[in-house]
Length: 292
Image 1 (cartoon, rainbow, N blue to C red):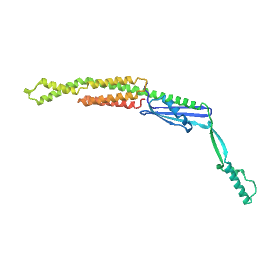
Image 2 (tube, helix red, strand yellow):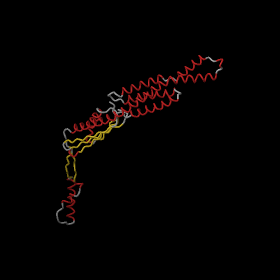
Image 3 (cartoon, rainbow, N blue to C red):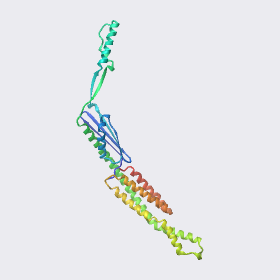
Image 4 (tube, rainbow, N blue to C red):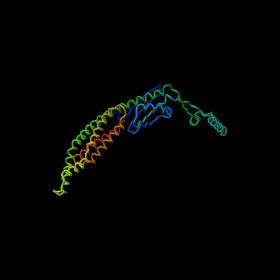
């Protein structure tokens, strides 16, 4: 089944009080390129995440975004810088004695200085978190694959219709070939006869030379190969494995045969059809750039 390389999937999960959000986007790329944007606390899972993603995709740039609501993972503790606090209180007492101040030192004087306190975060171990993250990633990958398959089916349908047009144009070129050879040979004969003395001409020799020249413009082999490539394309696109590169190679060969036909033929009608044929092949080739 043909799959495109464009897709999107989003999945969320909550384990205990920890929220997990996974977003995956995929776009065209010549090879498989996995990009991770994950919290620093999950860097230890990088290899496992990439391995899980590789199980779903063979080509394309795949961006994996993971967001954790880490409130349930963090424990906050308030600590006091007692050494600094002691210096602060001692200095206040010195000020009180030096200036003969009365009354107690208010607690607010110390509480208002944030540098005397620290909030320390301690990460709590949470069983099953890694497994939950991988499962959420796999579900998101499944959604991306669904979208890629749906779009791939639409692309395949359009490409097969264009292949039908290419096949019709190729058959027309084959049918036109015999007419062109006769017209080409007649033009050569008439041209040669115009330069020869009537009494000295050798009709058999002229016809033989004209036939040889006409054969140089024969496009039979190119048309045959072109039709063969069309059949090969239609068989390849039905395979269940990734076929984007194979299809691209077949289309390159089709363009090669088409260009050869165009260079061989001096027929106006064939030249016009060659333009139509190349246009159809180029359109299909453009679509294969998004096929996995």
